[in-house]
Length: 240
Image (tube, rainbow, N blue to C red; front, side, top):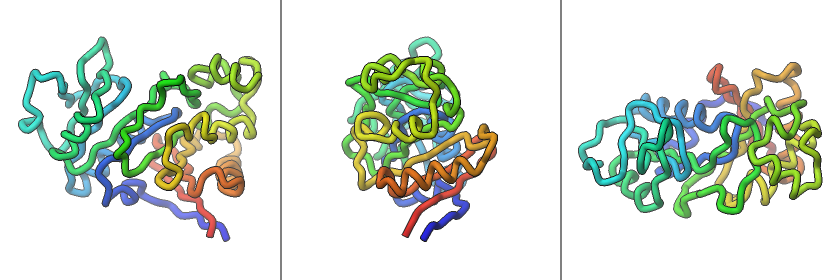
C-alpha cells in the first residue's frame, strides 16, 4: 500500500542533533528551509560545511579569531575560513563542538556548483561519522538535459558508466544516480531519506510520483520526499 502525505520536513529531525545533506539540486535551499523551521520551533541551529558554501550573514569562523561560546543565537552559519565568497569546511571536531553549543547542526557535506545531479570524486562526500540522519538530494531539473550540462563531475560519471556527455538524462539515468557508488556513497542505508527536489520544474507533475515509486519499488530507498523548496512544498511517499 502506498502512502502520500504533505509534511513539514523539520518535524522529521526534531529529535536529532547532527543532520547531513549530500547530493545536488538544492541542498543549500533545503538546509536554509530546515534551519528556519528549527528556529521557529524554538531551538538553536548552526549551519556548517565540510566542503564549501557561499557565505551569508550571519556567519562566524572557527579559525580561533572568536569564541564560539559568545556567538549569536538562535542561528549562525559556520566555516573554518572565508575564501573569496565561500566559507571553507570545518573538521569533525568543530561540528561536535557546535553540537555542544546549538540544539541542531545542519552540515552540507557535498558540493555541486549549482548542478541538479552530482557524481562524487574519490574524497567525496565528507559525511561526519556521528551523523544522525542524511538527506540525499537530487534535482528534477536534470531530466531531459544533457549529462555534461546537468551533472557536476560529469566526466567522472561518463568514465564510470561509459555514457557520453551529450547523452540525455532520462528517468532511468536519473534513478541510476541513487546507487552505492554515486549519491548513496558513504550513506548509512538505515538512516537516510531521498529528496527529489524542484518538482515545480516538471512539465508533467505526475512524473515526480512515478520516479519516487520506482525508486522505492526497486529497494533503492525506503522513503522519498518530493519537494519544491522554492514553493515550500514537501510530500512524503512511502510503502507499507
